[in-house]
Length: 288
Ligand code: AMP
Ligand code: ZN
Image (cartoon, rainbow, N blue to C red):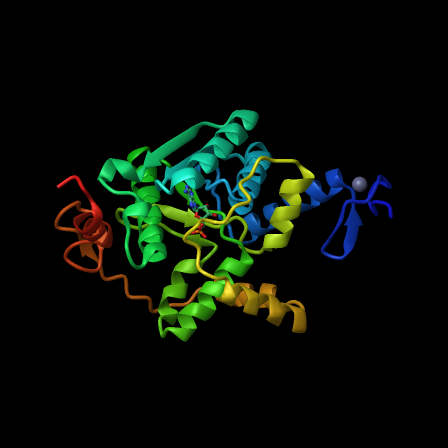
């Protein structure tokens, strides 16, 4: 088979057409650009801090942002968070380093160890502690260093599977936070999801098409991906389901109550007296 755009050797199908590697990558970047523009994710001249874990999704995101930054007039730097998950964290950091070197992108690193504990010390709800730690460190790092926007590599399936999980557990209001662009307020920095409408498979194929370094291993603490499998199954039976629901979810809804206060210990925004991050420190840190 031949590329439908240029006639070179075929690589893969993208949204209905067969492309070679180069044309696949071009079409992929074009789709990310449309998504960023559709939801007005980045404003003129903004500085974007891309949170890169070294996995295929955030690697694809960093590459796409790098490709769009001149054309759309924004700046990109990368942030890697060292969560202290043994060999997995070391491998991921090396991979992100070599990607940033290849692109000439400045890489910043935040280490959870500096707060007296690592994810390996966490007993019990590891993933929820890890999620809290990542959001907290991204926000503080971006704010302390003057970045306008934090970008994460969440893709369509991440957002839909979280939505179903929230629906199941009665926390549907949490899905308000899963917008393509969540404007900052007070001490919270704006967050964007440039891959909001991209699928995991598209991200993987892009990374392969460009031969970008990425870490294939799953985090050793990752839970079984039952909700994602359900999302795939619905998409298989109702083609177009993913995009349709994502676009409905992205619509503005009024009535969110942003009642918050400041953590008594660190001063970050929280809904309780002491924020979840400081409670995690109190529970797991060896620094006290
Ligand atoms: P996850 O919470 O693991 O599904 O990751 C969601 C997004 O958070 C990724 O696409 C990255 O943008 C970001 N992220 C996750 N882990 C890290 C990390 N160790 N360092 C920097 N960013 C991360
Ligand atoms: Zn081609």
